[in-house]
Image 1 (cartoon, helix red, strand yellow):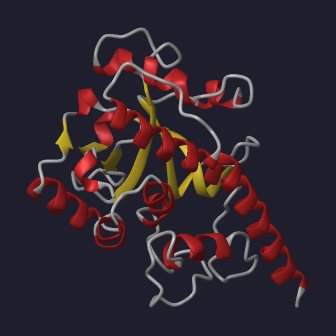
Image 2: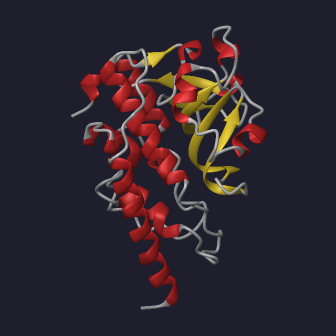
Length: 246
């Protein structure tokens, strides 16, 4: 076994242990419908766990490999998107994996496998499915745990899939800000994630893959990151309902 393979195996074991710890966490209660609280809390907690893995995109040449094996896991593992027929992920640009980045957390929350595998990886299929199943919500109703499609190119079309972590509620419903909103404060740890305060300069905070943003240690990289975006970039907000879960 090569050193790189050994490091990959160690990282996978650490991730497995971290995810097991997340299973034992109890979501904080909030004054919304109970089923939705549990699902949203699980999605956010699992996504934060993934963020804490410091997943960094491999170089376009494949060297350095960085977190290629972790990204490949999100794409091809049965506990994630299960696209196991795709070639192993080895380099930046090989696959647009922003939708795959959401697969693990939503599958862990119980989202039905066929939705995770067939709908979640694609902007087009997400829009089509959400329209057919009435899963769109207004932008001013965006909440943590929602899937948010954004236009990052400025052409008016959805081209990137993100997860809402928190919303500056002053921008959506006249609230008092990021850190007092009942949803945001329930998920953001002010002690262990103080760097987020310095980084926040947009309208909503995301956890997203295949993008440039913030790692928990403060580095700005391309990978699975936290970042903020303006509401002007939002094309669609999608909220799964209890019927979509097993």
